[in-house]
Length: 291
Image 1 (cartoon, one colour):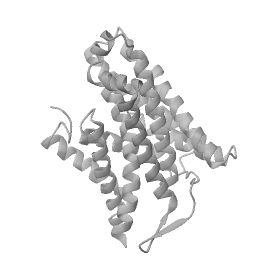
Image 2 (cartoon, rainbow, N blue to C red):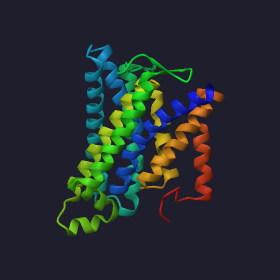
Image 3 (cartoon, rainbow, N blue to C red):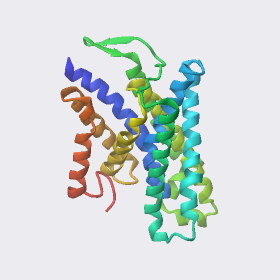
Image 4 (cartoon, rainbow, N blue to C red):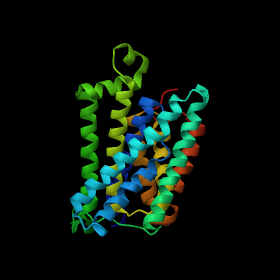
């Protein structure tokens, strides 16, 4: 039954997008950075997990951990090599720093993409699934890994919610997203909060990238579409709104899944981009964004 298969696969890819977009939104909400190297970090994680099994002959779990570790390292490198120097630069006017950060992260993502293509070619790479086999759901044979992917994403998002709302560190991050100056007056260092946020982001992007490699496979060509999808989700949900991003992730995920099944996988990102253009005209602040 095609409708049920779309429902199952759409939920899995939507949960993946939600996981990646949550970190993307968190960074913007706290530090005002739109990281356009997002897709490159996810692909780097997936390729590292693939290489761990294919080149280093590690087991699947070790490969997944290595992929998340690589994403964490690249996330910190993005902050220290690209974002922080621009933000601290005295030569760049404050009103122009945002566009410099956008350009810098975009170029950084392209550099990562080219390095992946140089060392590992442009061929698609599929990460070995942690959970193998299929399960029959009302006559539809669905890979167990798809269900595992959706469950892991939901679990990680739930743990992130607990971290932000139930721990001292998380509350500091939440406060920084609302009033950075007030946080400074309370004696908390914004630089440390930024490090925590970029660490959380790297872990989320790494997990999402590895799971995506298991679910659909990736290549260096995946960088652009993944960044575009994340950007679409964040804008649709409302810049800085985690709840809005979660809702938008499922809208985009199901749009792409329906397009892939009914038309062609080559056109899967087009409806979401068209929806983004429509929303920007009708409701520029997004679903749950502030005016």
